[in-house]
Image (cartoon, rainbow, N blue to C red; front, side, top):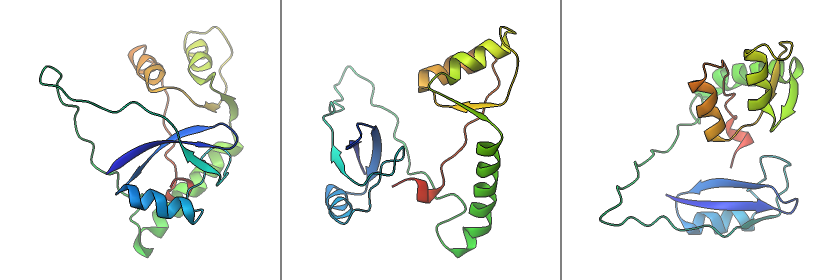
Length: 148
């Protein structure tokens, strides 16, 4: 598996995993890779630092490939449809606060602002801090067709 930092024509950046560099090349050439933020298929690799493991550095834990939600075949369709319906309900009944999610969730948790149903984005570090502070939140998984 190989991980690339990718970017779209609108300036969004995201990471994606491929079995091999040839898979990225083929998918990119055929327009199969789309930005998860805006849907653009004008995608290019972005510069990223390589991961170098030395004798002194502890090797990073390997991450196995994530399974497709509900399985990739027709047998997983009911679970994917249920998740799609749940996602649509969340999107319809929450306020999108974007990258201010961690800040807004913390303010509500500590009574600084009135509680309301929100959604948004946070960095992994912000999510860790919310969990450490006891702020309740959840992560809405992306459906397979939402990812590349």
